[in-house]
Length: 439
Image (cartoon, rainbow, N blue to C red; front, side, top):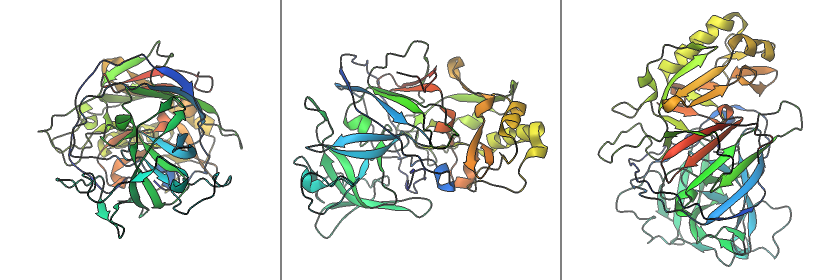
């Protein structure tokens, strides 16, 4: 996940999750700023975030007392600014529902107080609540190898982790414990984080999947939600969206669908049981239902075909059966206008270098259909994504080109939607909104 951290990790493991609990709605609300740093489009922004798998059942998730609302700027990914440590040091982290371990950029040098104003790194020497995990810690030496989190002992007998991403990017460092200090009265207990010393880019990761080491699990978050505004094409303009931990006052009109869960006995080598797996059923383009079997969106005996929601992936990805039908329909509608021989990022080949507004009008609205009548409607004005150089592409890539067998719904298709992850009730909800005005 260098730069915007949209890379697929090479490590997998084998677990599932279950359990429901009624959410506790009594929480104190407060806010702090979030923002997203804009980056120019590039092929690296295409890759979905690491979807981790671990031999652990997350079990039930008691509700926490942490609840807040924030705003953020959106261009390609959601970057939250979290106050970490004692006293707090603000750290920029990618809000990633496809990752488990949260990690920050650390500078192990002894810094003078206060932290250098131009620095974005976290200085452990300035935090009284910082501690490192020794090699003897069970997470560092699990009884069953955890391929999600490859760990070793370093020369100082501390727990060292390494993540290798599909493009060869390396993120590594020590596992540590640190508090997140929202206010004087709102402080998390020490959470396990990665303290990265070698990774590309200046941002960390806020892992929000269902894994035992995710921020949501460790902080016992019962629900969270965000509203991604429409991406602006005007230079220097970055629209503002909203992010909630805890109760969202905008839930009127939300439509929910249950997350798919899988028993521990149903181990599947190509599936991530800790992802937010949703029951997708089909796709419409311009009012026409495509002839795609519903089985293309459900995991088969080996786990291929899983459909997941991922805030850390920019584009959406489809398995070959679905992608080929979508592409065939686009070719039928606007085939002569396709940019011949052009493949963006090695995964997206429905691209155009002509009038994007006219092409979007010809393609029409795109609708992703789920159980219980839940839909994601991508209006024709937003079917194409600006990838730079005057080129616009349908924001869908072919999963097989990434070497994965899953359907991934990226944030480009979550624009102007409230997306709520109700962890206590094992469901995901969508609500239409003008996210540039959401509160």
